[in-house]
Length: 186
Image (cartoon, rainbow, N blue to C red; front, side, top):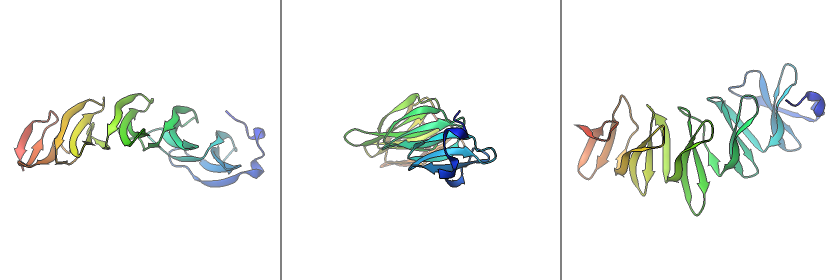
């Protein structure tokens, strides 16, 4: 851990409290952001990131130059800054983007393991352990392991709630179960 004596704290520009890390605030030093404990001025995260967001599920998004990653509550960079965009963790998973030719989304677990590669046009938040995905204008679903449990064949879909999801196609509106089978006409 970095000690307050390693920097001239009087040069810091203190910022707002950071959610998810009690008693800590963001600070700026020479244009870079870090995190410092208010009470004893212990530096939790040295000023090395261009931006740091609030903690969600024990992880905070960070930006270094034009790439994004995550740090843990001790300030360790647990997921390297290699993504073009990232979102907060939800149910232990986070949506990430890597832009090659076009913007595509995937998701990772809280240790950085890719569970769904960046191939989807969009990935929505996980609900009940399942995320809605969109690929080539069609909707489907993936589970927490990133396995596509319902193929992307639906014209529209809503998130799962109480074990079922509303989906639409040219044949009408249906509720499907977690296995993708129709359980009830709408």
